[in-house]
Length: 136
Image 1 (cartoon, one colour):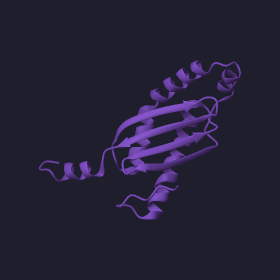
Image 2 (cartoon, one colour):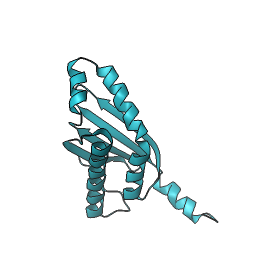
Image 3 (tube, helix red, strand yellow):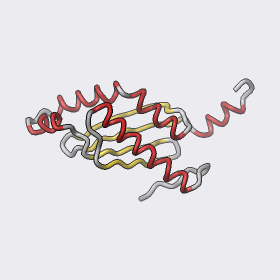
Image 4 (cartoon, one colour):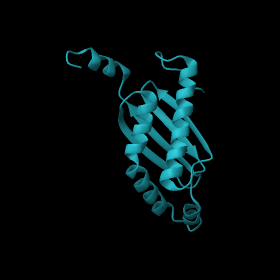
């Protein structure tokens, strides 16, 4: 099922935004981890939750760890690297969406080589109220 555009965004802008986010994630993976995923897809789970799914992102060294059965060690290593890159992930999403990232969650399935980046965005209503308040 395809996610619906946000009410404040035309369909073409919405699709372009999601493509830009997917492309940004691929670039960040390539720069930060040495290899970008071969497939990436971004979608809104709801108005304020952005899900980026990245497939086939493991490096040759990480694939060796999988073959050796070192899944937990690989998850620990990848999580360390992904959270060390959190500011870059947040910045990319904030620049593209124009919204503040309130929370970031990262995960990986080392068996199936699927990673996920979740971005919890400041609700649109909260952002509008902040600018409507005196001094905001």
